[in-house]
Image (cartoon, rainbow, N blue to C red; front, side, top):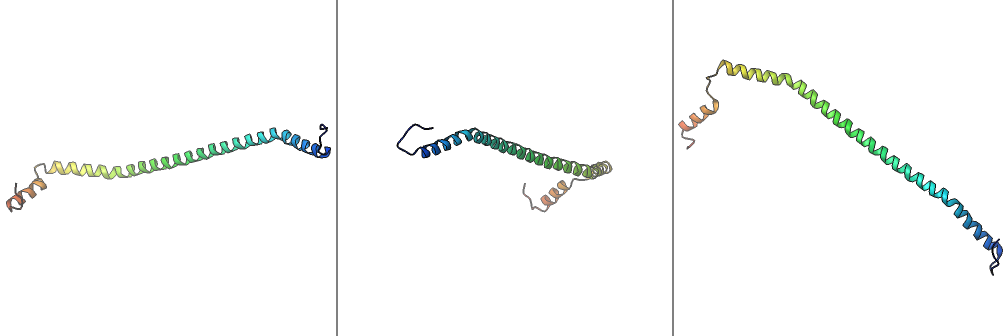
Length: 113
């Protein structure tokens, strides 16, 4: 019981009991706050992991698409290279179109060099 005061003893007892209830629940409130903070941190970790996985998946899909595009274009590039080599073998002395154009322009006096 509280020390004798000019205030009614029932009031001091009620205030004392309320103070004790607050002090008694403080550790539980602190632990609840710690658990809530830890849960929030774990949620952020999982969110970052999901985002990283999403970006990795997008990058892998883009790399796969580029590889497929290169595979499909390899045949046409090879055909173009072979056609160019065959054309060079068949007519090695064929006039260069740029030289022909330069000759025509100089002859027509449209170009002053």
